[in-house]
Amino acid sequence: MKRPRPNSSRSLSPRELERMAAVLKLLAHPERLRIIEVLEQRGHAPVHEVMALAALPQATASRHLNQMKRMGLVASRREGKEMWYQVADPRSLTILDCIRRHRERT
Image (cartoon, rainbow, N blue to C red; front, side, top):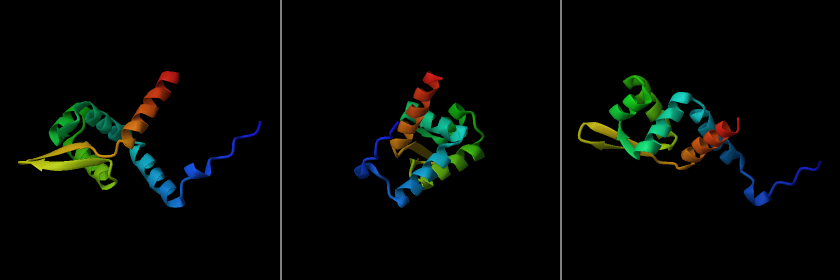
């Protein structure tokens, strides 16, 4: 059976492929996926709520949030003494939805 030829307008550059591989690698961790899920549900949340809802120690939650922030997946803002986080790149939600759809098929 012949495979359809890829649409060249949809082809990704090597740089884009590297970026997406880095994003997928970052999200290939259950704790980071859980954090994205918490932020999806809450819209935005202070770090102590992320910790509680994701059931993570403060150091672990902060490390994961900082990694995702450096990659541009989440954004933060300071309100008083608290750091609040929200999803910055909606593609992370698309990846989470793909995982959910895959779960439904298995």
